Image 1 (tube, rainbow, N blue to C red):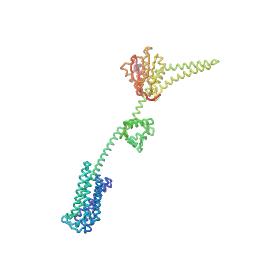
Image 2: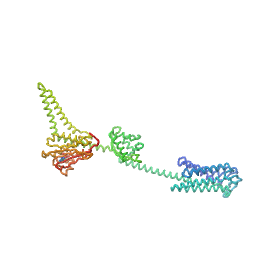
Image 3: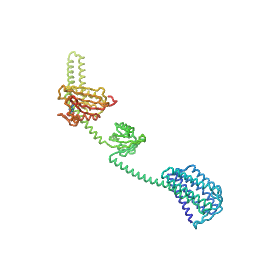
Image 4: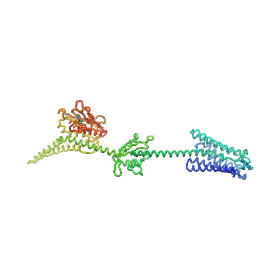
Length: 618
Ligand code: ADP
């Protein structure tokens, strides 16, 4: 086989290999139009190379004329494919120039089929054998040139113009990458295109005795086009590798994070607010008692909360959605088997143009802490109750006396009624009056017992709107006989427009009872004329009320003004020193303050504040 055949066959195979490769990439959907254009261009170049070889080996004029006639079809396809590639890949080149290229090349094909023997020759007069490199002989056409021949080079010039224009556009876009491509691609296309066309013209004109080298000239163009495409492909592969590495890194940091979260016993969650879907770690789902496969919406999440917490959590979330985006709450979750656990959650909302997108957060099981808190609270309530019972113990003498009065009255009234009824003519009206008195005395005794029962009760702490003046009056009623027994005069100064407070009636009664009994105790050694107790309620501020209990006792030394609230501080023989500590705890739990001071005229004043409940009436 001659070296010409080997070389041209290799060229054609190379073009076909390129074509197949890019056809494969096109099928993968990577830059499909650019790769398809390239595959078509490479196939056309392969066909042209094959036809060139056939022309060189042509046995007759007719055979050569026909090959040269149809050679313009793959050339048309090649030109159009190059235009397509530039438009798809570089997104450049003027459409009208693209159309000009296509029309001129199409015209060249038509002229090749319709005028002369083909576009090159009007008539081929002979086949000239030419020996190349001293060994291989090929056939070259001789004859008169076709006057339409010029349309071919014109279409090539149009293609060169189109490519140049596209290169300018790429250059103007100004990225380094764009400029590099503009130079490499446009210069290689234009140089090799003009080489091919110029060489063909010289061969046809009989100036050069050489085979056609259109296929050969287009190899560098194909290389340039392929390089461009591969460059992107390699870049994509590089990016894919980088992405893989980043993903691995991400997975690793996720693992580290979940390890840290699980070590800290934290449960992570994310609420996609737009689609109302909550993602959470498996541990978090377990915490909520929600199956792994179940989709969690916000309402679903609320449904597993304790009835008493649901509305509070909903309001808290709504507040953070409208506010600064920070969410913090403690709530109970009720498992299907009735078990209750306490959870503390913290979250942060991400906004986009003021629209909440998602909330990211963590939760932690705080059941143990809550149980401990509850136990402490129970113990505190227990102590408070004991102290109350103790206080009432102090009052037992006077209370017994107070109870004795109505009981004695009932007894004497009942005896009088017996006497009336024993008479022959009983005065029924008189008996009825006596019975009325018995009922009223019985009610009095009942009221005393009722007040005691309330104080002795060991109930739950319940904060309700209440009138502090009423609390003061109730306590003073309870202490009435004790105060009389001790010859203490009481001045009551109650603000009639006192706002309502939110509080536990029994606990506030306890505080007042304690303060008044301490005041009485402080005045126990004073002269009877000096035993003056004052109880006052007033508005301390717009949203604060103040209750003061003053006495005319010895007062409290300045250094003890704070220490009297310390546990076990007492100056009494029988004292425990816990009364004021418990009172301060009660007032603090009501968000108020209990303080002591000395009044200018002598004696101590113990006063406490409580926040008013705006807009609430009793
Ligand atoms: P206790 O009554 O068992 O001593 P408290 O905590 O009620 O316990 O009182 C602590 C101490 O505070 C009393 O022992 C007393 O010294 C002092 N104290 C309380 N109220 C007054 C008061 N009105 N005047 C003077 N000292 C008082």
